[in-house]
Length: 513
Image 1 (cartoon, rainbow, N blue to C red):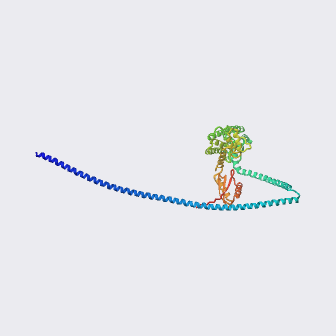
Image 2 (image 1 turned 30 degrees about the vertical axis):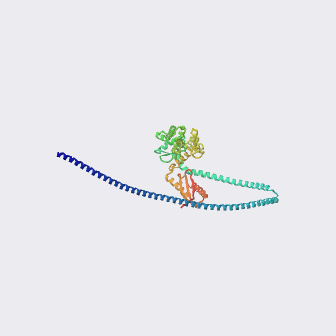
Image 3 (image 1 turned 135 degrees about the vertical axis):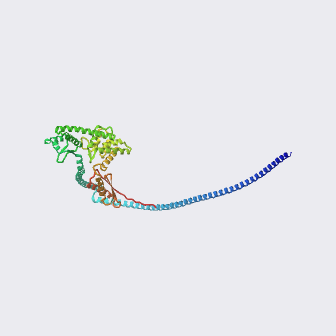
């Protein structure tokens, strides 16, 4: 029984302990909640204070920025007001100046009106005096004014006619003398410029032989062989004391080539007599003709030109045996054709037409019959004959300004022809001579007083002369240009023509600070 009460007491004690512990835990939790609440209130107060500080700082910052903006705006307004005041002051000054000028103009107008009235009055007085004088003269002379005027005019007419006739006769006589002298000068200068080089280059071919014994066989008995050879080829054969050489002389390069090849075959064959000579010459002539045609075809194929008349192709091949100022005509034509194609392509034109016109531009230098026409006109007529297009024919005829240029191809062909002929080395002119000619041009112009600088451009075809504006006036520049041109004509040798441009310039430079 006692253990039951012990158990009950133990349970009751546990329950009491549990209740006490629970009560103590509840009190502890309540205390903790109060502490946490107080802590949260303290944190809330701190946060409120921080937020208030941040708001105050932001307010102060915004206030400062606003004050800066207001100050800047006030400064701009002040600047604008200052400018407006200055502008108003300037306008006021201009208005005063304008008013002053208007007043002066009114005064000047009044003076001019007074002077005009005075001039009109004097004019009337002069007319009256003139009429009185005319009446007085008519009374003295017994003639009216009209009759006297007619007699004076007739007298002056007769005198003027006599003087004019005399003056015209003098000018005509002087012009005839000058024209003859100038023509002779032109001819002589032309011969001097081209005779030596061109004659040697274009009229002589040297045929080399192994020994001088062959010379006798070529001459033949009593000169029969050489006479037969000259008659068959149309070339003069000169056999002199020159060792191992026979000179073939003639102005036709094709004939010289035929004679050279015929001599070569005859010497190789060894059979040299009139019948054999005639046979070989005919055979060689056919070979040369075939070679000419083949050269023309090959040239047109290389340049991509189609549809040419066979006769034009033959004439192109014949260019191989012609030269101009020492420059092979076929090479010049090919070069001009390529230049024309490039230039036409750059300008947006048809390069094929330009290449065709460039190739044919000197075709008038190689016809079988040579009429007395400029080669450009002759070439144009040949191309018209063989149905070339009008723009190409015009370009050929106009490349030396013999006819008017009608298409854009014409100036391209003209320019490219000049480029091909004027480049250094194109026409048998060594570089040293080319440079020396340019230096001579510049030094010749520098020898004149007032010249500051000279420039020889376009391969020596143009000379730019810069003169001092304080030393030479505009009128003297024309005289200087003519003097330099005359001196170049008299003292220098050159292909084509040289353009002299005298430049006088005055510059005034100032700086606004």
